[in-house]
Length: 293
Length: 123
Image 1 (cartoon, rainbow over the protein chains, first blue to last red):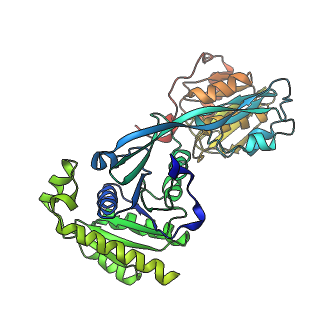
Image 2 (image 1 turned 60 degrees about the vertical axis):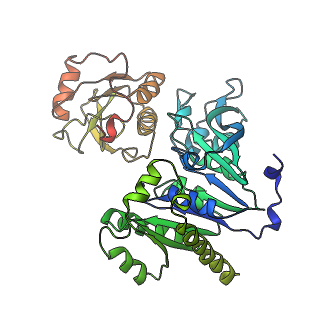
Image 3 (image 1 turned 180 degrees about the vertical axis):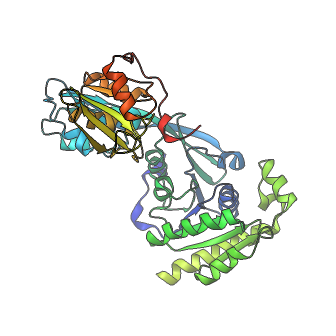
């Protein structure tokens, strides 16, 4: 597709990622409703272990391609069993005993260190399939999602493969996975703004604090959306105030919204007043970008 | 011959730890003269591949037999490739396990007896 080969240099548009720390706080709800409130937008589902934006976007998929990682294969004619590959593998995917290399492909992250450091150039790389990228659209909204194959543990290569499709001519919304580890970092890296979606419960706050630490360490501008904001307690508000974190939006706990979500519908369609709220959310984020230059 | 016993502590009175890859210590026992030393298992907290790395380390120490509670498939592959004999099913103190081993009370294990991640405490 022509927009895959877009020019990265000329972008004035925002790339916004939606992350959370705690799972089930409403990342996808925010990502899809924000995306479809805007025009000229591209939505990337980087929650590749369980991508679910498609339920709300209902895209027509136009193409797909397989994601591979390189895993080592040893050329026995060149290998002298020196053990260098085992030393440099951070993931314990290689053992060398009795001068024989044993490879555990399911532990390999495809980093390529063993190939690089092998003094005898005895490591040849084989392609291992770990997931798939699917590209489609609904009307003007471009949509890309990654799916990690069942049983695979390494989602970052699939997330990176999704992000290769970023179209800088459009506003990009990225639905990130939950948590605070490599998959989240891969998803939010190099984005202009991170929305952290939370809920005002002890679990929500605990994971928000962790996520905020990660985002601060990555020096990314961010703000918080408090979902189901009338549940729980005030500690999330207090934390944000104390830490000078802006609360961009609040969504109340509502049976109506839960029902809309459960049917795979959009809040902005069922409750049109929310479109304005999402547009205001976007304006606030744009303003942060302008203020930072 | 050097025998490695998976141990919960650094002494012969410590209990055998049932996990090969994630036990805190190995007691490396020399059957020739009855001497032993305790070696910390650096793989016990590995994010992944603990059994593989532990198998590598045990092999590097020129151990010829392992006495443990259970051994998983990846560790089994490494230990087998290193021609290290595996005796699983050991319980009680390390000292008891050594005595039983010397009396030939353990049978050599023919294959892995637990799934991967057994030693990670997940049920």
